[in-house]
Amino acid sequence: MDAFAATRLAAGVGFLVIAATSDLRSRRVRDPLWISLGTAGLMILAAQIAFRGLAWPAWLLLLSAATFFYAVFFGDPLFGEDGFHARPIRIVLLLAAGALFLVSAGSIPSGAGYEVLPQLASMPIMVLVYQGFYRLRLLHGGADAKGLIALTLLIPAYPDALPFPVLQADARVDALLRVVFPFSLVIWVDAAILSLAVPVALLIYNVARGDLALPQALLGYRAPLDPFPAHAWLMEKITARGEHVLVLFPRRGADPTGEIARLRAAGVERAWVTPQTPFMVPLLLGFMLAFFAGNLLVAVLGLAR
Image 1 (cartoon, rainbow, N blue to C red):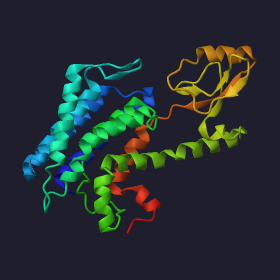
Image 2 (image 1 turned 180 degrees about the vertical axis):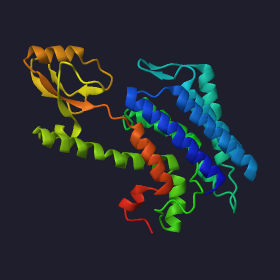
Image 3 (image 1 turned 120 degrees about the vertical axis):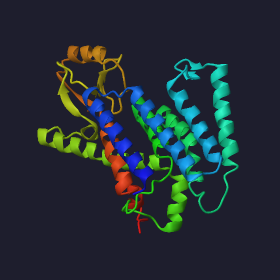
Image 4 (image 1 turned 180 degrees about the horizontal axis):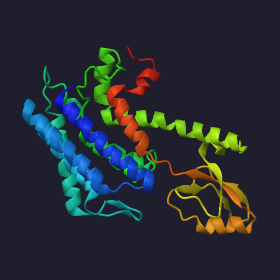
């Protein structure tokens, strides 16, 4: 295994173990951890560029990605709950980062030794893509998005980890995937596939308790309202018309106190809840799977050789 790949593997596992532990305990992962992981990734990449003498566009891509990355954590955002806010300094910085990306991406040389540069070009793009995923609720927590953004900087290109990964596509397909399917996306897909075990486990748990009601048995479990379980979202409510309804995908972060009081006033003692799943655990496992096994989607689609 390449020294840079080994360093990235050790850093990723170390930081994600801390993140998973925090997520299990409190369902929160604080920003300093992701800032530190992303910064470590930028430093490792800078050393790699210098040590291997990569062409100058690699430095511009690093600066572009760094600007987009730190903008996630520092300063006031352009878009808030109440809409768009014109913040001149922030807009200038983001436009400069975009210009660096365009200049570097349009100047990437071809030929032997430069195959990694198109993969590095995914860094600024994926920082923005994961923020978009969060806004579209494809990622349910801010820590999920920030974690994937930091991992994008830690592993901006497919690592040289021979004899791993075990699952590899045909050479031509693999060359294409390395450009259009960044490694952090492989981590997310592997983690998402592992997360499919959660509804299966919930179904088994509910069947064992005699609470087989679909589809809610795949999404949650019945729990007493007093005391309300920690790290769960309420799936039942009483509407303004007095109707007792089931909400399969409740709004995250809502205070359930009022809904609990209305349910109890209606004579409900136990209600369906959906657990706040600690995504950092499958993300840690997905990270290791991506390194050693590869892209599980390649196996699912029958593209592995």
